[in-house]
Image (cartoon, rainbow, N blue to C red):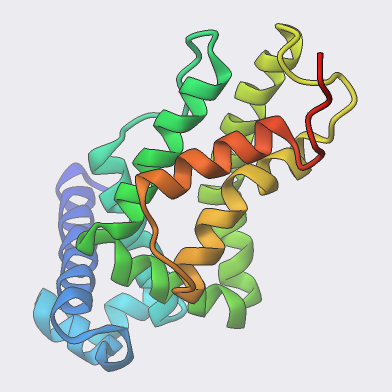
Length: 199
């Protein structure tokens, strides 16, 4: 492949992903179609099918493109030595992202498609969710090594306990998703559910 061909392919790929993302914002996921994306991007429908097997796969890559543009590099969590403060910062940022209109439509669309498409679910686990979970595990592992968490806790379960409530409330719209709720999740996860014993 010549450099010019590679550049044209990358230009077309980004035009398709940008078109998909823009349409998602304008008309909602249910009305977005491969045909509509192709028309907006100025490419043939077959060009899209050559690179992506489904509408959900296009949306996933569009979401990844946005994430890469705003974050860059592999995911990491802050490690100041204060686990509660670090988790509070991260969960509050997660709440802001979930409430951001730029992210909400793609994330809800992805959640729907992942539930229905095993191949897309596998790609999501490998390319996005897996690296994010490893970053979360690494931060908790660091806290274990510092004596801030028990040595025998299951880190995967701990990750689910800390981040799961935010996703569940957001997905089901079961209550307000606020910074205050994020703070309560951190406090409850780190302090446990048992009553405190007097000193």
